[in-house]
Length: 313
Image 1 (cartoon, helix red, strand yellow):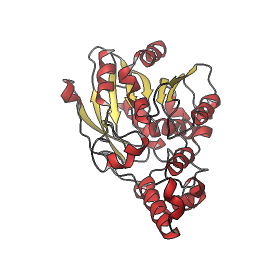
Image 2 (spheres, one colour; image 1 turned 30 degrees about the horizontal axis):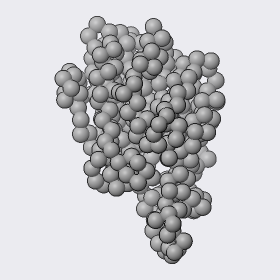
Image 3 (cartoon, rainbow, N blue to C red; image 1 turned 90 degrees about the vertical axis):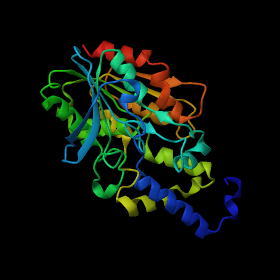
Image 4 (cartoon, rainbow, N blue to C red; image 1 turned 45 degrees about the vertical axis):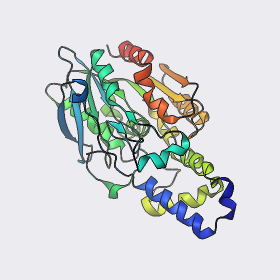
């Protein structure tokens, strides 16, 4: 397809860009195929409001006797339970980039629970079972920041959670949304001790990489115009790198170095812009699949657990 794109007509290119823009602007909801119950974990289905009142759905997994809480969210197009990329139509959308395998996030919660943490895992707006909002668009963190702020506010207001020490486990879109929330609502994060943030990404970078993969890398401006027509939000406003400059807690980032869907310079720029001394950037080697980065915690959790242990005191 990449080699043959020069033979495409403008009408064909317009169709491809239009379909991609539709999918990027309004994410197809993934189902929750897994549950903590599959792994023998007691849990409670919970619902709480975002900062602007959007109902968010989640799981609370208690660790009796523990006063420590990890709040977890997810990447774009995923849910708190992961992404069924081994099934259609998700497989066809992602297999060409080497990401045609399933991501199940529940083992992450098993590990956190086993390490003595209570876990609150939730779906961002327009994802999973959470409410629809803002016309159903994804905003790369602008509106989703309200969900992050709402999750922390819920923990601080809940009679059983309000005195717990809080750490955040914010993945991809969830990470960018956390950066944005720290800019928009800095006061909310005073009780948060640390952040573990796998694979934050800038919208323009991941779109460029996906367009390059199909031979349309030179049509990024055309694509942005379509995004603006569908959402009213261009790439410049989706500035995760700038938002990183408002991160206020010790932060551990990790990223697949050779991820075909981004450039190492993107997450490096975010890391460099985080204005705290207590920060680490870990590169995952030996793969080009972005999904391997999402599975890194359950494969090699020790560095992240060490980060939570160090700062959640």
